[in-house]
View 1 (cartoon, rainbow, N blue to C red):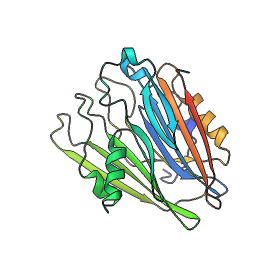
View 2: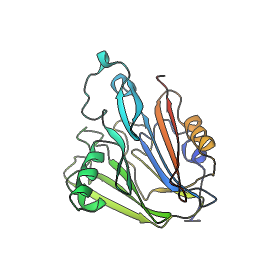
View 3: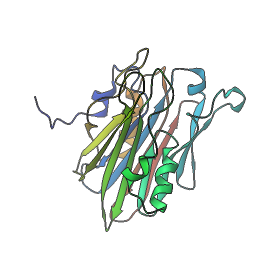
View 4: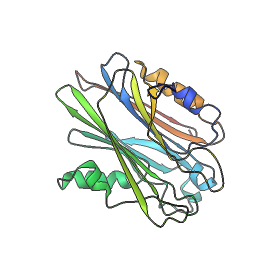
Length: 239
């Protein structure tokens, strides 16, 4: 068994109808760019009624048809925000918790002690988060998984992973193992994935590999470490 195996996002996603929401963070193969990606999927009409929007460099989930919104509490939030030299990416409103925690002098993991998995029994969806921290032409990144300790949601287990970026390697964290009732929660460490140099091809690889019926939106951002320039790609199924 090769514990350091790196698979493509296509290999990680194809044939899995419901990995849920997913975050990828890593470094391009040439070592020149930091990468962050976030996608959402949905099974219910309420979940599928969404789009990503970009406002002043921040990414938000918003209703596609506001008249059809049933419960906005777990589906409408800021997914990507920047605080000083930190880029925050999450699958829920803990984006704001991290942002506010950093502003108060807390670390990434300290800010998240105020949160736990989503209150959506019986699924008890994990909260997944990532943060890139830039410093003098390079960066490090952290990822967090907040998941239920058992099927009843009696406690929250907290996992924080800190990474030294490696060229061509990223880490992929998603909410579910696969589809099911209830949906089985992600388990194990974030998965190692290949990060190519070209942002457009990476976005296309992810989008084409997601289940056609359940995929909703995707956002990918590449940041040039030398210049700070940003490339981004946003894809909404509800266009």
